[in-house]
Length: 170
Ligand SMILES: [Zn+2]
Image 1 (cartoon, rainbow, N blue to C red):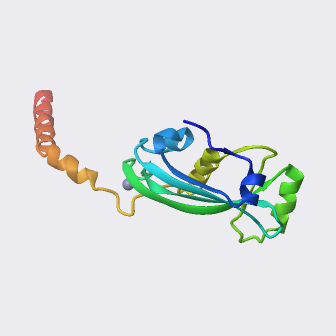
Image 2 (cartoon, rainbow, N blue to C red):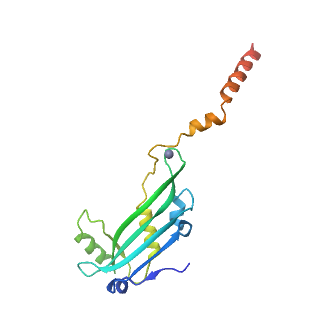
Image 3 (spheres, rainbow, N blue to C red):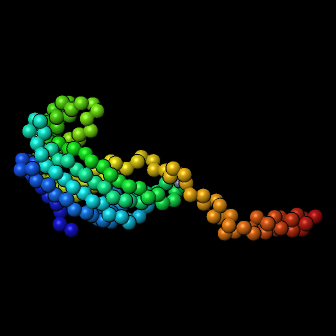
């Protein structure tokens, strides 16, 4: 897979954009927190300059992935749909300066890069940040009911064994 490397200052100055799709299997860090690597994400990155003429990337990521429910540990389909603005600073001090100028409720993020930026890494970061901390089904599938149907005779079989066991002791 060819890396999507951009130079933010140039990419943003000329208002370029890139878009595509990538299978979850192609994003190792994301795939490692999913139930499996099924699914594909559509992504888009648009360059612009912010009000202080800093390079700003608008990142959009969407698509269906499969997480693990933290209550029942079963697969939980999840639809990712996120959009974030990232301002690119050349140095840590500049990043601090940009961050302090942002409103507290501004969801803009600041990254530091003095050269090329790998768009796919940014997209993967965004996807990871957009995941729920503790994914749970609204209503977990009733697995207990399924087990009961599968082995509906077993409670009686166990009861029968217990009775026989008690009988042997006497
Ligand atoms: Zn669940």
